[in-house]
Image (cartoon, rainbow, N blue to C red; front, side, top):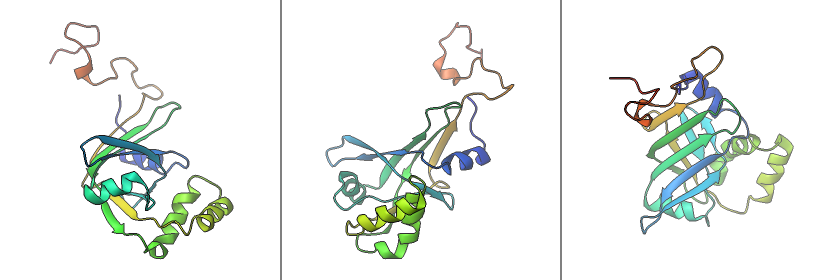
Length: 169
């Protein structure tokens, strides 16, 4: 499958309404995956756990994350990020980054509803984290577009030796 160009990746990550799944590590080593809202700015992914969320406790203990951002309709764009999250603002400092949170909310609901959502949940403290895409491992792909070849689109490791689409190396 073709990788997304940097421009395609940026356009996709800036698309309103696309959810992200964040994977963190529980203290007993089990994974925890949670679908959440996010914001792509400054070549980073920003997200905001609430104080009582299990994944916030996991991140405070272990900043390693895997992020999956994908879409259901064609061309099935996908971005996978593996890296370390950075705590930018801990609980109780929400006011300092409220505008960023407003931008996150506006990606998922209309602006007036986003403001109502913020005001209705303002008493629920959140933290602000980011993952810098410049230091993380980022993989992306999509289905072929237009006149791009549509056969043999999977990575060669998926094709067994001697099968129709396996290229000799």
